Amino acid sequence: MQANKTADNQYLIPLMDGTIENIDITDGILLTTSEFVSQEDIEMTTTHDDLSLFQISFCIDGNMEWSYINNEVVHQFQIAAQQSQVRYGTFKECRSRISGNRKFKGISITLDEIIFEQIFTCIKIRGALYDTRKTAPVRVYTYTPNISKILSEILACHFCDEMKKIYLQGKIFELIAVYCDEVICKSPTNDFGIRISVEDYNALLKAREFIGENFAHPLTIPIVAKAIAINEQKLKDGFKRCFGVTVNDYVVEKRLEAAIRLLKTGKHTVQEVTWMVGYSHTGYFIELFRKHYGISPGEMLKNNK
Image (cartoon, rainbow, N blue to C red; front, side, top):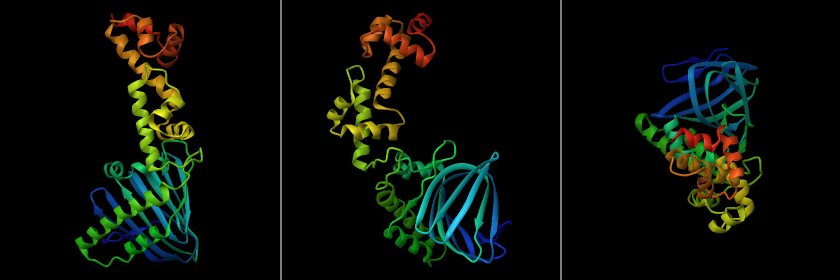
């Protein structure tokens, strides 16, 4: 069943009492409000020209099942009352399934990439974002009473024209801030079952910076943890969760990056480079270098002389 779009950006669906309304708040921010009761089980289909979405959805009442389809790959979602999801992807088609005689009320916020990068950092670093380019589970979050209050205020807005958009833009930013603080930051949002607070994330950033400045020295998890005053387990688990590599792998990464720079100058022997980047055994360094780059450091040195 196709949704019919009206001149005022509302979708009217046969066999359904109510509307779905899209409001362009400003460049890069789209607000979608939905409130309806379906007379029977229906499936609604909307098509898009490779629509790229950064979207956060809140279910206020009822439940909804839907799927985004792109290049024959189907990404399925479902949320119920007081639940939310965050997702990203490029989609050509959306199919929504609505149960008969069921009320649904919800709000979705769609952002372009620029706006998303500016305000959704906490959601990305905590792994809360479902990215269709990667293999990861869809995470569902139960939101707080403060979130419910803001959602109600958004739906109750009766301002006209531009004043309405100004009011709603402020409410959307407030909603995102409270959502990040009360839901994402306080939820166990990763495979390790750990919580990453703002303070811990800042400490992890310091750890990464510390490694980048001291990779040539002997570095272990206890040494790094002591240097930045963080619990060793938080460092070990949090670093992997936030940056996608372990502490030890990041040390190796920084050492090998430095080794490439030194070898490309053609001024140092392989043994000198080994010592300069923090390794004491040339044979181990050569083996590690070849494993990562498919070429030995000696061959790279020869190519740059």
